[in-house]
Image (cartoon, rainbow, N blue to C red):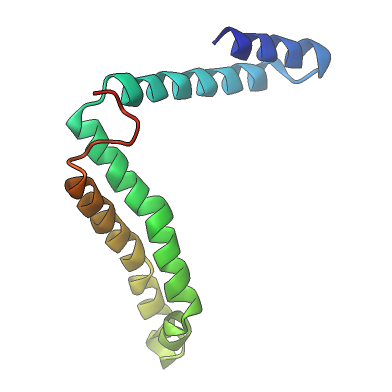
Length: 119
């Protein structure tokens, strides 16, 4: 945490970065350090389940969306005539919803324990 503060002070004085940007970056960095400590040292089942759901939503859901978009299904749905764009908008969140369920399923299989957590 001290090195984070030192980098913030150095970036303000040496690189002439505006003070509000330095303060914002320091606040985000220190919050991330605190969150990393919490999930590594003092894990709880509720927070771990939330992390598995979030990780299922973001990377797994995005990969499923890429498969949906580049497999031709998305192109097929948009060429359905006047309802094409409507069906495309309705089917857009489905890969992300599937990612949430996959992330929760992976968490259940691991009993909602994160890798490298001490608790």
